[in-house]
Length: 405
Ligand SMILES: [Zn+2]
Image 1 (cartoon, protein in one colour):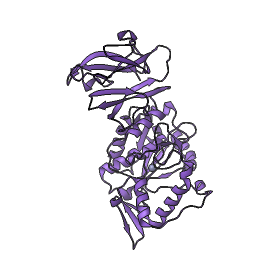
Image 2: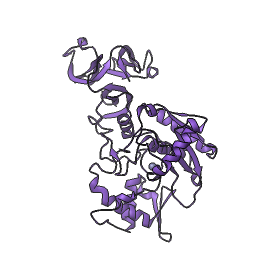
Image 3: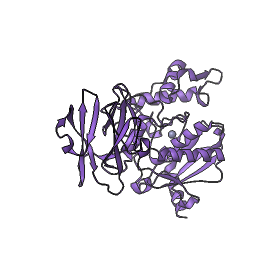
Image 4: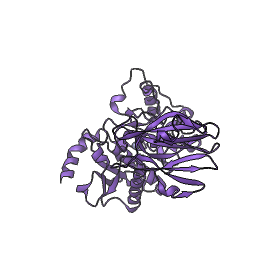
């Protein structure tokens, strides 16, 4: 009963913030602009604009002159009038968004750590099997992001923080509605699925539900200017970001998706995700807490995954994680044991401190394993022991480099 009562109070509040998945919604209060909105009904201009904001290729955006409507990627329908309004809205708000429309954003309120660590989900009897499958996949997707957010199913709505239900409305392009966290740090309590779009492929259902859950967890649309800017997500095109307001086939998270989830919900306070990159040319693995040091593909290093979380400044009991570089063999080397090569040795130069970790295990931490591949001259670190186990592919286990969250 507690849950139902809380939701009954919460619903009118959240009604203000309900998000439509396809329709790039305009909040009423933002429609007042100091400069007159720029209107256009030029199809080519609008097609290019829709491509920019949805990530759909321009040749996948068709226009029916008789009906005066666009079809995006074969399944999103938007009227000429609506597209024109969105175009005007974007033009009117672009000046208030110095970071650009592709930066990642979060809602004013996010989950507190207790809620984030236990987001319980219930889907009522109106949700068909295919969508139930998508819910399970979305839960698995979020649990795989290695951040504080942990989702699970429960069998009673009264134990649930998020309740899924459904409706059918053929008159809209909206697949689903979700709600945002509240001021006390609860997640958004509802997702409503429009069964009119049950014809979507399984892959798109998975994307859609993962996206809607993103709203409940506090994430806003990547391709819109509303919300609090998430640091380290740049003004760069990210057409496959989960939180763009257009459904795609599920193909995993983008680099900046992973960056943003680690920043909003790190595994421990004052920690950042240790990012792992690989340079195939020099066969070198590189690790940093600073996502702006390299970028997704701006150098010869490609992002691979996160390897847990480290402190950005020293806390009691933690040790610096020293970073060295050997320009002769192109190898980056890290150790928490300064005595190992001190200020530098054997061609390795000390570059600085990457972060802070523990040299003995404390609650909530896991080992960061260290390997070396002599033939490649490559030091490699992972929290996932099963990746190379006791040694594989020329990599020899050298031990535990330290303990990370
Ligand atoms: Zn959305």
